[in-house]
Length: 137
Length: 139
Image (cartoon, rainbow over all chains, first blue to last red; front, side):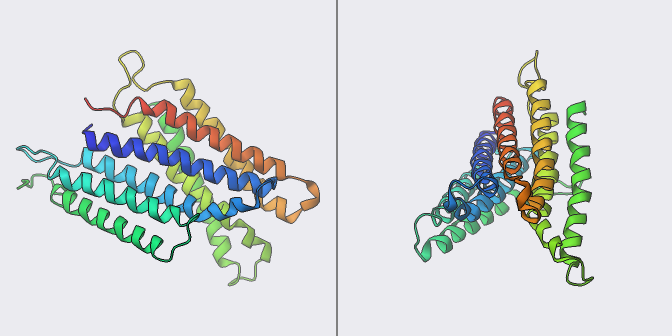
């Protein structure tokens, strides 16, 4: 497993734990109400589970298992991947912070960073998606 | 493919079918004049798909394909793996029944079942993380 995949998958695992914890707190309070504020966590729960866990895991594993270039750097322009990792998680943090800090620009800025991160990752992975027998440039 | 992976993935496929059925009922409610209580299926539908199907598919494939933990225990603790399967599925099934019932029949006081379901699923998530962490590594 390349280092970028290790970082992305471990970050995804941590975000799974955080997302499950937020979800548990909401579900618990649906059954036994001890914190009415719990339901305000729904947006953060969805964002973390979808982007932080599922999508980040998929991107990290894709970077690992997609066909590699015959010559180094075999995984492609890895810096784009690190950039994507930073942008996706930085953006996710801003979107999630919107739960507690009410600033109009915060979720938009977060989403814009996430978009930039996903584009960066798409540019990295694009040339590694190929047919059998097709040579990687 | 190890038995644990097959069990996770096949259980996931069952949830996929059941989850989409719940979703079809939810979306078909206004079209076919189904009882309004069908609307209570929405959170169940979402979680049958996201936890029951997608998460279990991921867990099954991760247990099968991630790098070996060690020569002696290539897939980490199998007991932990089965523990995750049990906790997650009991928690999710408990939720699927008690969440709508808790709204329909508040006098039955089923809220504690929902709270229990939440705790079981949380434990499943963290045991999976602990059991998988050591297999996420460079060569």
